[in-house]
Image 1 (cartoon, rainbow, N blue to C red):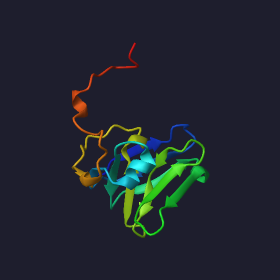
Image 2: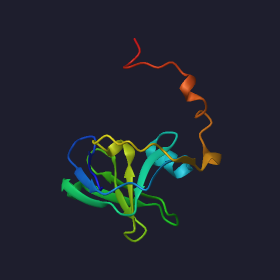
Image 3: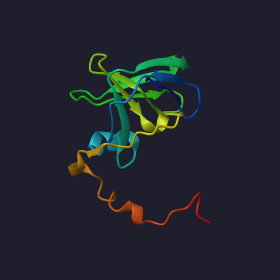
Length: 135
């Protein structure tokens, strides 16, 4: 059964709805994903059968394709948040996991491009954890 999921950007000017299921969930450590997230990796869900509907603020959505690569990023032009993008001539929908407002049960399938993994991205689960800012 297909499920409906909702998502939005940080400033809440862009909202979207997905109908369908995810094929896979990858954490990508390539240098492009590190640059465009400002973090150790991207966390993207992939779907070949979901339908994307912009429910608010579609005019704020921008898409950047890194020349001479397959790297594509859609984002909100007001706040810069990553948003879903349609890739491979409309055959693939890539959804940044953090943009979803609806909880999901799928867990990441794998880490990709681990040879490019950030030097500091190692055994992070051993660090102290806080439920908010440390005091």
